[in-house]
Length: 376
Image (cartoon, rainbow, N blue to C red; front, side, top):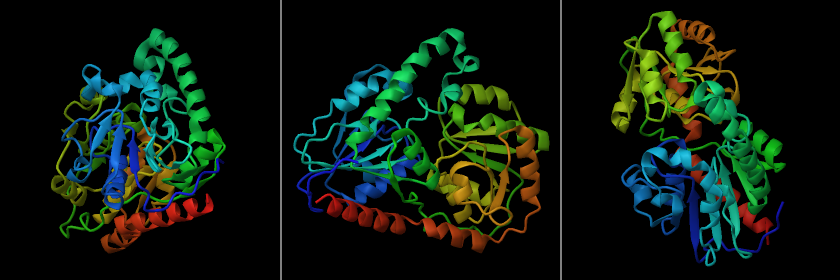
């Protein structure tokens, strides 16, 4: 690990580096907490769609990369992935003392000055370049020609991603699962700090649940929302899907009249949807899965794949069911089983309270203080 200079906690200048600001997902909720901890910090990001994130984030000075000038950036920013290395390395950090990146793509690869301390809160090493290439760039998704072009590009990005891990003084992973990926791909140790969940807002509703199951997710290939659609169809139950993303048209065609794609919803509507669902359905191998904890905070169980971060939050038979495989049959069976569970909403909410925003902010401050002291 790099050794760094001594930087006081009241550093003269702090910047927050985030991959992109195009909506309020789990990563942006982490950034929101960091904005409260560092109210005067600038935010550096590859792309910013004004109005797409919370007022807390928008209140900060936001500086964007060259990708901000590319055409149709709000919709096509993921297509500009090969430009991200040059874009993130182009940020000027000469007068910065403390860099805090929140990264699942390129943010961790900013180039710090010799005096700056860089702590990265890592949601995941770059998924597309490592173990989820086929989910995004498989032949069945982009064709044989597209797959052939993407393979060397992603291999190059993986090499760059690994080579730039040394620009971080210390990694903080959002789960033990991600800490393992950081060790495997970057050969670096990481602290573990689970992300924040607003358990004061997400609370049980008291009314009995409705008959539907719920998906809350970005509409991207690796989330495997098609598995949830097919499982609901097999079981003959209604599925409601909250989220936006490039997979919308494909999923809408697959869903037909059996599922409702609701798009983006406001927080109060989302809370009502959690409270009214039989269960949240999560077919992907999640790095952590903030929506899992939000559902539990609302007193509702979860049907999730028994891999990744869900294994660190879901207690089988108590707060949900873990499916063995990411197949429609396995998820249909798990969704059927969760309906027969004796759900204790208060117990689920108490478990969710362990992931509060207050706990995250206190934990992050302590890790930062400890690591900066160790760098002296």
